[in-house]
Length: 417
Ligand SMILES: [Zn+2]
Image 1 (cartoon, rainbow, N blue to C red):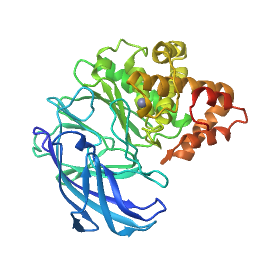
Image 2: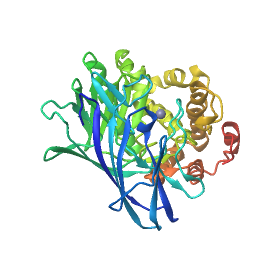
Image 3: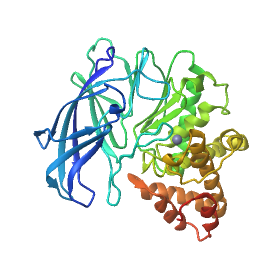
Image 4: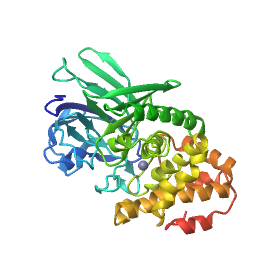
């Protein structure tokens, strides 16, 4: 990577085991840098060691024919060589460079999940909802800089290992591998068990950053026993110029505005949204889902995880949390709305996030606390490293309650479950 020129030259190899149960004639990959003009320049693709030219790259969709076809249980290896010209960062995107920071998010081609009935799961981009669906992968990333004498600090979801002139990062069982780089980062660090917790921030935000690190340790300490053990070696919270927060495995981005607005205590966006993005490590990272067609599975669960965080760490603030995060905005709309059915960000979040959290709370009351928390833990356990659907969610709910919930489903969902 040439940090100062905002470019990278990438040799990427993918080993893809065919776990789909059907014979595959092609692989479909998402190439998100294609959404930015001039950001992605493909040089070569090889399949099992032979260069191929009959691939197609249309927008974000890269289709690579596999010949002979890949039988179930077989394995194919792809090498993709490309150059990245990192786009200038826009306020509404996480990817991009500014003078003081470069973020690499969804920066590499990845094979999208194959669903036996729906085919390759690569949905259209939409500004207010996440459109990508991910399988999990084991990542082995080697990074070096064109100017090794003056490298930026790297916020990475794996711990660095020396590897000659390279620095190696290994992250197993993750859906994304996002990086943030800056020469101006300051770092605040703690740990829960073997999980390293770091907040990367900029000067002037010292108090906010130490609070954020503390909140993250509280959260991992709480959700480890309540949900499932935190699945990665590192948990980073990274400040950036952005409107909101955004989750990646082991790396949560949080707006500089939230650090600026930090007022002491927990009644603020930094704490609520920070807890939300970190909760996505369980609901998005460990338990995957189709973010475009069933976004409530990770969003309502992450929003309700904020509630669980507050009731255990700041119980006097639970009523404040409901008003500040949910009721103020007037939750309404079907919880199982795909991102494409909404007419605006507000319309989408009021249904999927806010009414989603209200539904989960009603479900909890119906089930009782004991059954509800057994359900959450069992859901995390059964669906770890898989893609959960609403049918999985309700199947596991019903394994933990005999209560009739059909009225709740009728009130909150457009589809029967
Ligand atoms: Zn979220």
